[in-house]
View: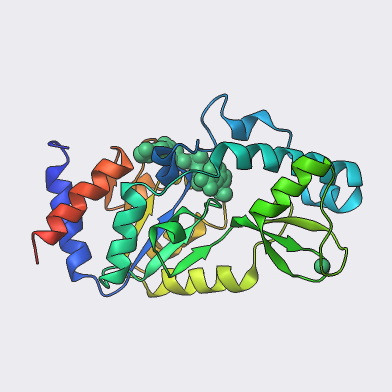
Length: 254
Ligand code: NAD
Ligand code: ZN
């Protein structure tokens, strides 16, 4: 962290002076909790065939395949706990240092860490939603039901089609969440983009909006992103270590 120490202090200065900082997170913030990101070779996320939303709607067979995959991932990640990065962001929110977190993640770890203002662009894997009556349910018991009965559970309220409350390929993002995230980005004077490859839109449009109105963008990510040249600072270290260093530098300012 020695090399980046000047950068760490610049970011801490901006954070301390900012009136509205928005944090955008991607899969990278959760790898230190043991959840692989999208692009890690051989990772669980690359071993499944994608079930597109229209396939899910069209056939019972696709719905079975979808639930089979999701239940396997549930088994692997249900016990994941927030890490230093999630915890620091939760603390910054309660201390009034950041407005909130916009996340591409579906793992629920920001809320588990105590963050309250979280905009989950891609929904959450901790719940299922009925596509027919919109009722929502905790995911755990439904996963158990699938594993015991080896068939896709139906909505207890209406008998309709239950799906994880995450956004599938081919499914549109929740308009209200996206609108709120866009408003935060427009009103921000600082955005920290953390652990996102910044290639998935519309999430990647948020840092673009921040830069477009002249606000500062800081990128913390191990690999390069298409927006690096637009950022004031890019830090390449481990997210847990970088955020811990920024946190210490900010605390030093009182
Ligand atoms: P991504 O996999 O495309 O990119 C993650 C980035 O994080 C990479 O560029 C990598 O260099 C960086 N990274 C990983 N671990 C890091 C660490 N410890 N320190 C610093 N950098 C690190 O992820 P994305 O941009 O979020 O897009 C993938 C999509 O897949 C998301 O939209 C998300 O919905 C979904 N996804 C979610 C989860 C989750 O909820 N935890 C996990 C995998 C994929
Ligand atoms: Zn229903």
